[in-house]
Amino acid sequence: MKIKVRAWDKKNRRMLYPDAIWLKHQEISIEGCFYKDVILMLFTGLTDKNGKEIYEKDIVKFYNQVEYITGYIAFDHGVFCLKTYNPDEACYNPWTFRAKEVEVIGNVWENPNLLWGSKDAKK
Image (cartoon, rainbow, N blue to C red; front, side):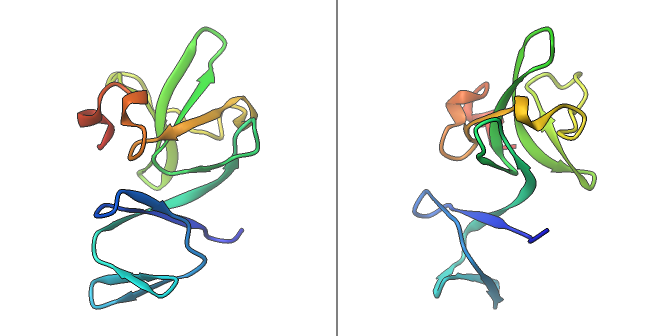
């Protein structure tokens, strides 16, 4: 599997989808432009029910046979998982449910309102 990333440009508030990333003196070069304040997110290797690639910090919803659950994809303890607003709820591993039942509805940077509030969405 090819390692893919995307980057959130905090200064210009936009998502970047680089073909290559170069690190130099605490700066990241993405396609010839240098950025100092970006957040890199990994591709999970999964696609949603619409064929859209699922990345870390994507907001997704899925049906767990009882109700629809909304949360965001996190890389936690060496695995990707779906975190929800309920801290007592277990972190769902995306490989334990069928990824084809998941739908990407946004990401925490561009659509924090889709979660439970922008303050918590930036965790």
